[in-house]
Amino acid sequence: MPVITCIDDLKKLYERRVPRMFYDYAETGSWTQQTFRENTNDFSEIHFRQRVAVDMSGRSTKSTMIGQDVAMPVGLAPVGLTGMQCADGEIKAARAAEKFGVPFCLSTMSICSIEDVAENTQKPFWFQVYTLKDGDFMQRLFDRAKAAGCSAAIITVDLQVLGQRHKDLKNGLSAPPKLTAKSIANMMTKVQWGLGMLGTKRRFFGNIVGHAKGVTDPSSLSSWTAEAFDEALDWDRIREFRKMWDGPLIIKGIMDPRDAREALNVGADAIIVSNHGGRQLDGALSAIRALPEIVDAVGDKIEVHFDSGIRSGQDVLKALALGAHACYIGRAFTYGLGAMGQEGVTKALEIIHKELDVSMAFCGHQDVTKVDRDILLIPKDFTGDWA
Image 1 (spheres, rainbow, N blue to C red):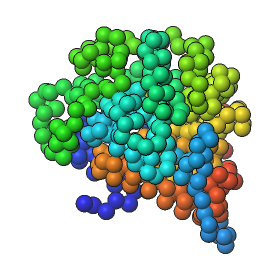
Image 2: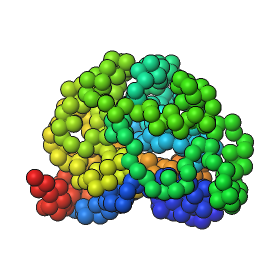
Image 3: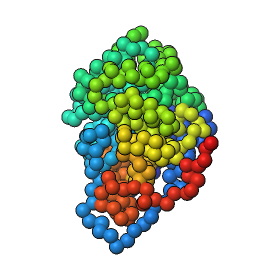
Image 4: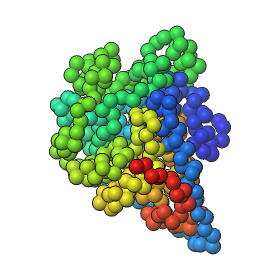
């Protein structure tokens, strides 16, 4: 086993152990992948102000996310097909998050169902909902999440239509994977992954198959997903969803201050500044460039969370300093999961935490909730004049 010291180490091991179509699913963006690349690269334009001769003892990364105590202000983002990266992947990731003391967010398009995760964890997790045309199915999703004890709901609002991801199309992405000569040849080289999949019954979209009308087996799933997303979604519809869920509500996919204000108006408890990891509108701003203007627009009226592009604890610290209340990692924990299962997710969280803690110390802070823009050196044109 190689020595793992950073998220990139996990990524290299992940690439060796997971079939190509699922590696490409995680490690890809839409169209030319400009936004996918800039989500990560733009962090490097922000520099830290290093301080010395300050008391670095007694540091704390503890915080809260929508009122929930967390070991650090970082959650595991909702990631579809996590159970294809590793057998029972959602359960393993949820257990790692639970033990570490951070939120786990289950995707609607998960392999393990809401009930699967609830039965195999001890603490409440969060559930992410896509905006679908079928109102009855949406209500049932919320009801199932309530019955499972989910403590927050996340509504993703940036997937009314699907961004074109060339690699997914070329790979024939599906769950379970289609058995072609190419996919079989690749999967035969992933022995540990294959043995895991043979040992589980969870190989389909657990929240969909057997729950959505007309979907009783995987063969009808692709046609359902192509027709299910609500292209007519507007803020009035989101108000209807707010009525379906009486617990803490987070709206994910905000990239414009005007939409941040709308989310505030519909009664959301938090928003997530996110461009879906660069998987939707290629050519959009990186999420980190969009963050400061959104924070300035809504101030402390609503919790502003951040997602897209984080690969280190230093990235987390930069986003927090720019005004984010909390952050999410998606690809970073997926690398760990595919590389080493639950242990790999724990390793990813440990890496992020250590980098966050040490970098905070070098910037002269003891309390992660107190960091602000003063620790950063930001180019004058970072957010730009986009008139």
